[in-house]
Amino acid sequence: MRAVAFEGLKLFLDTANLEWIRKLNRMGLVDGVTTNPTLVAKEQGDFEEMVGSICREVRGDVSAEVVSTDYDGMVREAKHLSSIAPNVVVKIPIIPEGLRATKTVSGLGMRVNMTLVFSANQGLLAAKAGASFISPFIGRLDDVGQRGMEVVEDLVKIRDNYRLKSEVLVGSIRHPQHVLEAAKIGADIATMPPEIMEKMMQHPLTDAGLKRFLEDWERAKKAKPSITA
Ligand code: E4P
Image (cartoon, rainbow, N blue to C red; front, top):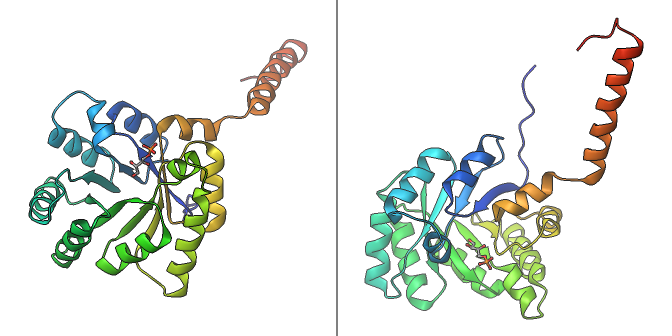
């Protein structure tokens, strides 16, 4: 019998930490990785080597961000980052120069993840410029008292209304409930810190239930030696 293929919400890790990526990837949970300059700065080592290693570990898309804020610099960096591995996605901020750079590099066949999206209108422009991924940052919106998921709801509706090819990638996830909401809304991808993916696995009743099963099994083995395991 074949394993059941999962076609639902894609789960990305929002980290540049290779140990975490390896650990969770071994469980078959990691569809891709997003990094940003803050996450890269937390790790030791050379940026390009880091991106190369992550790309070898994970088959899916790996976002690496440009740090230039002018058109020429962004295009130059995009070309360079894309040359590291075929699964690199170039992350570009949604500023006017970023939209222009996205138009150019997506036209050259590179995939762009348009980042720092805080409104559905910004997302709409990202899609128009040719971004493959639109990244609304929901936790940061929640932090300032705006319901971040509303932007995701709007973007999913726009995607469906016009059958857009751009994928809605929910970023700045703060807790497992955010992942659940993203799945219920119909977002394409949720990217999360590794700790949140771990929390998604956990439930105290699972631990208590397993403990009891094992204790009962031990008792049964003593009472009925015919049981073996
Ligand atoms: C997404 O691609 C970003 O890297 C990320 O989700 C930002 O999240 P933060 O608000 O936790 O920094």
